[in-house]
Every structure is written in C-alpha cells, then in structure tokens.
Image 1 (cartoon, rainbow, N blue to C red):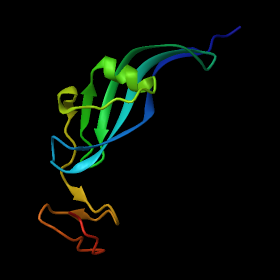
Image 2 (tube, rainbow, N blue to C red):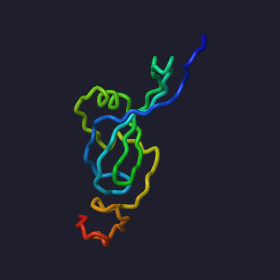
Image 3 (cartoon, one colour):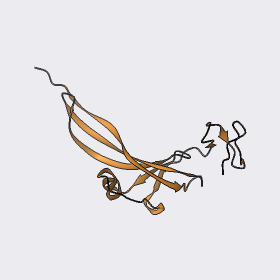
Length: 122
C-alpha cells in the first residue's frame, strides 16, 4: 500500500468588493479580499487548513494590505463589512501607474482624457 498526501499552500478569493480611495496612489478603486493558508491533503482530499491570513488588494495600483483576522473571518462568513483605512496595513506596494479603465493604456496623473481611446478619466 502507498500513501499519497502532502502539505501545500492555497489561496481563496472571496466574493467581496468595496470601492475606496487607495492610501498608496490616491486613485479610486476597489478592494478584493483573499485568504492564504497551508493545507494538509490525504489522497488529494484536503483534511485541515492552518496559518490562515487575510489580505486585500486594490484594483488601481495592486497594493496588497494585511487585514485583521476578525475582519477576514467575517468576510469569509459572508457578513457585510466595511473596511476602513485603519484596518489596512500595507505589506506590498503595487505599481503607481494608472491605466485607462476603457482600453488599459498606461496614463500619467495629469491626463484628463486617455490619449489612446479618448475616454474621460476624472
């Protein structure tokens, strides 16, 4: 008889989105919340998870923030939570290049219209 099992890490993205102004780049965007964890599997079936950590990522500059466990758990349970700036601890600074929401063209901060597609930005 042989044993198939192991330990690996995983990521779970929650169905949560909140509009906010980014603390890093100052642009308006949305927060997406996800959880990372370690999991023990036995015959490809996850048995238990541990070391769960909750994070939020901005859509504007992709900065990643750490979230307190009680807020992450509430979001995981489907509760309606509003994340405030004091809940966010930056752990990875994203790029500060803005992109046109219409065509994805990289923009400078002083543009009012996208030079590629003409979309009004602000």
